[in-house]
Amino acid sequence: MGGTVLRRAVKVAAAGMMHYSGMRRALATYQRIRSGGRRILIVSYHRVVSDFTGELQRSIPGLLISQETFRKHMEGARSAGYELVGIGDAVDVMSGRRAAKKDLCVVTFDDGYRDVYRYAFPILQQMGIPAIIYLPTAFVGTRRRFNHDRLFHLLRRVQQRRYRPVFDALPAPALDLLGPVHSGTKSVSAALDDFIGEYPTHVLTDIIDSLEKQLGGGPELSPEQGDVMDWDEVRRMARAGFEFGAHTQGHNVLTLEPTAVIEQEVLESKRAIEREVGGTVRDFAYCNGWYSDEIIRVLVANGFRSGVTTEDTPNRIGGDPFTLRRKVMWENFSVGVLGDYSSALTVCQLDDCFGALGMNHPVPGRRPQAMASLAQILRPEAGSSEDLP
Ligand SMILES: [Zn+2]
Image (cartoon, rainbow, N blue to C red; front, side):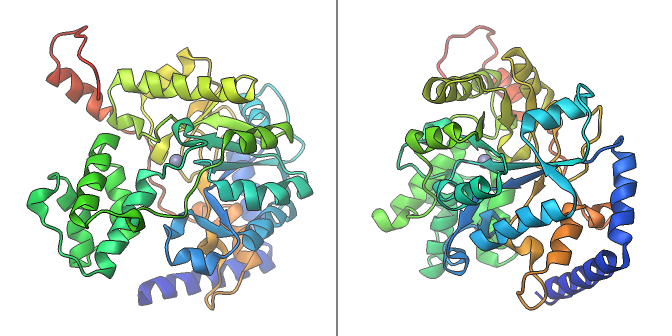
């Protein structure tokens, strides 16, 4: 904890120094040249909430930003000289089809949480800022909650009840998730992050089911928060000019799934949005930020024009539109040492000053297509008609 506070203090002090000395602008110029003449910043948010402190007690912290801070981020992006544009404009400039007078910033939201409709939509409309929302379509208009939110909720329950899980009665991989939380070597969010990147959707669902059973069942084991927009809300935003991209149907990390699942998840999520909203869906967000050549091949074959990752490095003119880099933002991104909002820190983060100085440690999103090969080993007969779960 002490290390975190110290690191934050150093970052805040460095941000103030860079911002007020003009070094931030110098670094921005350097990044602009390295990016090929224009910077293309893509920011990613999940949930925008009205009561951040309250929500922090029950939700994954890294998915949250308060309405006020979100507004300040948008103002910060403008004051740092970015023009806020749609994803299509950014892709056009990146490919060299179009020139831009200013650096560009694209606002994106993953998962289609309803609080984006409630709390971000009015701000964006008021400020005239476009945005794209990536939808896992099987959740839209249902009461279903995401596996990441359900697991987070269950793990917190386990902690609160000081419950010792009976591992013999849980699927074997559960040990990788509950072990580090139980021993205190990882926080709940960190353990969850690592786990979701490693196991496919059906394993997550199995663990949720058996853990719920072990904890005695009941409605309090499923999170109240984390509801997703319905199609009417989606259409209302679409009519106001906001764009929607595909994010699979069931929020599957596709690098962990076989090709047949990749094809179905990509195509069906695209079709669902086109059917409900109209227009053509050509933009995709990789779940967990992970992608592979195989997933990109499926996107290209189905008429997509872009794919966004969560790799926090600058986009470059001439770069691949299927590996767009994004900065994942949340409340703490711009919080000073005493919990106050720091506008200097925000603009330094948006301008990627810490990245330029080598202080960020971006996680690469390109992964081997793990389960595809495993699925082939398990089903040696090519063209076998065995149904997937
Ligand atoms: Zn997502």
